[in-house]
Length: 165
Image (cartoon, rainbow, N blue to C red; front, top):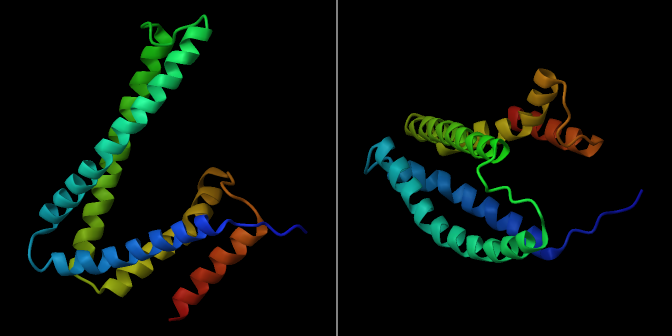
């Protein structure tokens, strides 16, 4: 069996994400002492939007230069108002609204859940859900998402060890 080499940069980004994720639970718990749950969620989302909008605009400029070069070399323009492009735009809007509603509900449930429990228990529930995500899809939709033995072994071990604490 070949051993995969994971670049150090990728591992450091994962560590950074875990640190930010862990600190966020404490910040949510402390923040709930001063403002309400909806206010905290709204400010958190607004702050995220303020950070992401410049990144989206920069990314859009890079993509528009690549798209212009591609359209100059191709015969078909997908933004001409055809049924296909309208359907894609409609699917994108419906998908975006659906994801936004789910994110809003999940964020607010988590925020109010932290108000009535400890940070450790909230972290446990979140970690448990992350571990059980693939198993849920396998059982519900009979579909593998990641699907190798190491994934099943690690998620099962994580679930068993968190339940024993």
